[in-house]
Each structure stands twice: as C-alpha cells, then as structure tokens.
Amino acid sequence: MRLNADYALDSQSNMVTETDATTDDAGSETTRAGREPPGPDGLPGVGNTFALARDVFGFYERLADEYEGDVARYRVAGDTAYLLTHPDHVEQVLVTDAPRFVKGEMQQRQIGSAFGEGMLLAEGDDWREQRTTAQPAFYRERIEAYAPVAVSHAEAMANEWDDGDTIEIHDAMTELTLSVLARALFGIDIRGRQSPVRAAATATRERFDTSRLGAYLPEWLPTPVNRRYKHSLAALQEFIEELVAERRTADKSGTDLLSLLVAATDGDGMDDETLRDNMATFLFAGHETTALTLTYTLFLLGHHPDTQERLHAELDEVLGDDSPTAAILPELDYTEQVVEEAMRLYPPVWTTFREPAVDTEVGGYTIPEGAVVSLPQWIVHRDERWYDAPLEFRPERWAGGGDDRPEYAHYPFGGGPRHCIGMRFARMEARLVVATLANEFTVESLTDAPLDLTASANALPAEPVELRLSRR
Ligand code: HEM
Figure 1: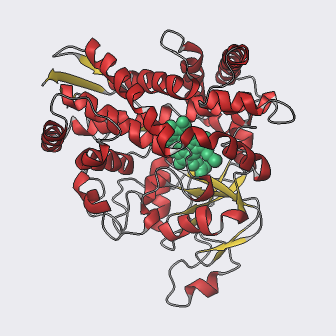
Figure 2 (figure 1 turned 90 degrees about the horizontal axis):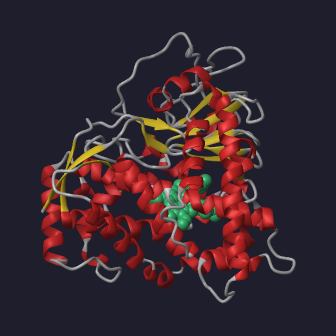
C-alpha cells in the first residue's frame, strides 16, 4: 500500500469491478494502450457520485491505493473521469503535453457563470492575451513592492490581538489576505467593504462543497443553495462594476492589476464581461488559497512546539525586532520550509482538472477526448514513494530544496503554461505574514489534528480552527 490512508471499502456504492489488469509486468505500458483503465463502476446512472459525496478524499485515496498503475477511472454525475496519481503523469498533462489538454467543459459548466471569460478558464488566444495583459503586475520587482502591504496589514491585525486571546484563524487570515490583495493588486482599501466578496466566497464554498449531492446538480436548478450562489454573484458583479467605474474616472497611469485590466478594455481590447470575470477570478483565486495556506501553516505550528521553537530561533536571529521585508526573505530558510510543508500536507488546491482535446495516452492507457482528468495534489503530496512518513509535518524535508523526488511530487501551484500566475506573490505573502505573526506570538492549536477538511473548489477546514495566542 502506497498511501497512508485510513478508509473502508464501500460495497454499496462502489462495486469494485476491475475491468483491466493494472500492474502486469514489464510489457504493461504497451499492452494497456488503447484500453480503458480500471476503476469502480459504481451504481447505474450515478456512477461513483455517492462515494465522492461521502468523502472525496477517502474515495481518491482508495482509488490510488487499489489501482496500482497510477491511472484509475471513475464516473461522476454523467462524466467519465480519470485519476492520475504519478508525478510523471502530472508533468505530462500540465507541461509536456499541455497543448493536448484544455480546462474543459466540466469546469466551464461548474464555475463558468462566475469566472467563465476570465483567465482561469479561458482557452487558446483569449487566454494568452489575458495572461500577457496581467503579467506585468506579477513581475518580480512589482511583487516585491507589495511586500510592505502584506507586512503592514499583518502587523495591524497582530496589534489588535492580545496575549491569551483565542482566535478563529481561518476567518482572520481570509480577512487579511483579501485586504492585502485588494490593496496590492487593485489599489483599494477594502477593509469595511469586504462583504460582497466574502458573501460570494461563502456561497461559492457551499455551492461546490463536494459532500453535498447538490454540488453535482446543474446551477440552473432553483435550489436554495443555487439561489444564494446566484444572488451573491450578482452582488459581487455589481461591486466589481463599481470598482471599475471608479478606476475609469480616476488617473489612467496606474500600473496595478486593475489599471492594466481596465486599460485593456480601451479600443478593441478586452470586453467588459471578460474584465468583470477576471476581477472575480483574481478576487477569489488571489485571497482564499493564500488564506488557507496561512491557516494550515499556523494550525500545524500550533501542534508542533519544536518546529515553532526553531522558527522563532530563525526569526530572532534574522529579524530581531525588525519587520520582515522582501529583501530579507532569502535568509528565512526555515520559514520557507514551514510554509512549503504546510502546502504539501494540506494543499489548498486539492486537485487540478483537465480535459484532453484529443485522445491521449497516459501511463500506457488511452484517455479519450472530452474525459475529465483529475490530478490530485491531495494524493500525490501524501504518497510514501516520494515522502517518508508522508502524514507527518516535517519542514526539514525541504532543506536544500528537498530530496531528489520527482519535480511534480509537489505542485501546489499547478505547472506548465497554466501554472498559478500569483505563485510568487502568494509565496512571498505567506512567508511575510508567518514571519510577522510568529515574531509576535506563540500559537497553540485548540482544534484537534488531523484537521477535518471539506473539498469544495478549494480544500477548506470543515470546522473552526482555533488558536490560543501567547505574546512572545
Ligand atoms: C497559496 C496560494 C495559491 C495557490 C495554492 C494557488 C494555486 C493555483 C493552482 C493550482 C493553479 C492552476 C490551476 C490549473 O492549472 O487548473 C492556479 C492558477 C491561477 N491562480 Fe493561483 N494559487 C494561489 C494564489 C494565487 C494568487 C495570490 C493569485 C492572484 C493574485 C492567483 C491567481 C491565479 C490565476 C489567475 C490562475 C489561472 C492562471 C492561468 O490559467 O493562466 N493565485 N493557482
């Protein structure tokens, strides 16, 4: 068994009908070509939807464990899907064979009404143009200029906390990363104006919570959750239109992301819908994932006093009483290892989806055009082939850049041409915020480990994450 998983077979919803050999000897790669990968058929009509809804992480773990060729098939809500769990397959899909894959119909169906025309889901030339337009906001020197924003917002938050306080860290980090994003990339102070974005984020989490069967139903069905989702999206879009209108009447010479996007709508450029969907994309993609990284990092530190002590020693030595800066980050090696290890163990993006635009061979099997391909960070990051004691939080494993494990054994930001455009920003912000907060406080986790997670669009804590603070 490769995965250190704890789960039970469910004979009701997952009749395991192996349709193919998985690990026959040397010739397997060639003999499997053109054949369908093995996997559970599930129930007629609904396939494995119930098993996924019960526990998508457990379902994926079971598939990865049982179908040892690293390729397994499952069926969900009318789609045939393929779970690819080898880093080489991840690299093939995201990097080497990237032109053969698109984001695809399933993601467009799922989140198209909110983000459909934006960079996350755009394809081909549309995507290329949008990425080129936004790229200057993510150049290294621009990113470094955002560092004081992250630090000053984190310090303002820390100043409101007292010795002995108990805080719910997920909510606090969401508020923090949204305000940093809005200030750095959109040039606005969103503190006190966060509610349309926060409400839309909450409704989105609920809509795509894979443990609800409703998550697999179309958006047009007038369920209460769908109605809340649509209503909150409309309010978000109104808020975005206000921001755009404010910027259009203001000075046009700005170089932040909002100015770049607004300027791109002049003449024959980007249309207003694309601008709006990109704003929604950046508001979401840019804050929730980083908030989760910080939540999980602080939660893990609060359970590992020795790690925290070592982190404090590094901060005392490198920073003393000073605030962290972008320039000092290369000296904060251990801080970086702590954040990387938290993203390995609790990857905010728990899987990445693609769709082959043409039949494509992966791991010796043919994945047909139009299928759903799932590349689960959740599984690959916890595979004992690449990590000793994969369920343990051991930042030291990243010392010196990590062992000689395959490159795509760790891909919290995806990879290839569609890798996260905000990666450098997110990594910098996470390290600066951890350094700022850990320099002020020792944290103790009051919520039990391992953390119970909900798989929605991102992997979210299923319960409040409480920390007790002691001022250092
Ligand atoms: C720790 C924080 C973050 C994580 C874990 C994360 C993760 C990811 C991943 C895995 C992808 C690839 C999705 C795919 O291939 O289908 C992605 C794409 C993207 N991310 Fe992030 N992200 C983070 C922070 C950010 C930030 C701060 C921003 C913006 C300020 C951002 C904006 C985007 C955008 C626009 C894309 C789409 C890029 C494209 O398709 O060209 N993300 N992110």
